[in-house]
Length: 356
Image (cartoon, rainbow, N blue to C red; front, side, top):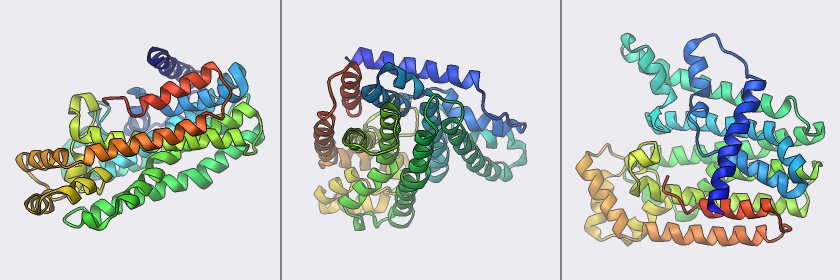
């Protein structure tokens, strides 16, 4: 089934691009804005969220609903990408999907302006993210076979419930890194770190499945099956982020397509860091307090990674991820058998069985 899922994700990407080309988004005249707005989208990506939307629609409404969900799926991919653009600014990450982050692209374009180029790069990235947010709303609200009342409900959920949850999760994550990362990360509890994940990552997975489910049932109301798919996706989203935190420590930059060890450098109080710190020796704790979130050199960062790997944080993240996957299994069991349910099961497994 893993091969079938890969084919489905690839097909989803191709279908999204057909939709985009047939109904192109607003063309910005400012070159760096035109480039930055769609830079990440055009680099590809896993397309997990739009595929989830399509699968949920198919699971409740069959092939016709699956196809009708495509414009919404494209909008959800745009929405995800604007959050990535802003996330790279907040985390000071200069690479995304194997190439320069949007703020770095703009800064490089105007490098002859010195320090002002970097300042404008950040400004441009914020605006490009805002532009992509607008494109997301336009894609969901625009030409579609989905009933107007369903489209309106999806937008209400995205902009009035799940979007704010995501933004609050990102806010707390940023606050924890900036205010507590440099020597005070231990003041954040593992449960608080999990709550950040539920907002920052789980919310967009949840609304992707919920949007597809509403399209599948062709009605804006929440039913038991809509709730089951929503709960399934949110649980998988938490597991996905826990695995992402592991990969941020163990993967190569080439495999990951973005900087590794950024959580160590930023001092983000992840479940992995908090667990390993609690299990570390007194000397190791003292070292981590001196290094994590404090612009450490490569040697210090490597030793911090070795401590985190040795003190149980990875194992705890895997244990929690397995727990969330079991919760997702329970929700998925409510769905009737179908090829879309089979794909959702494979999608669930892919949340934790991955190396990037």
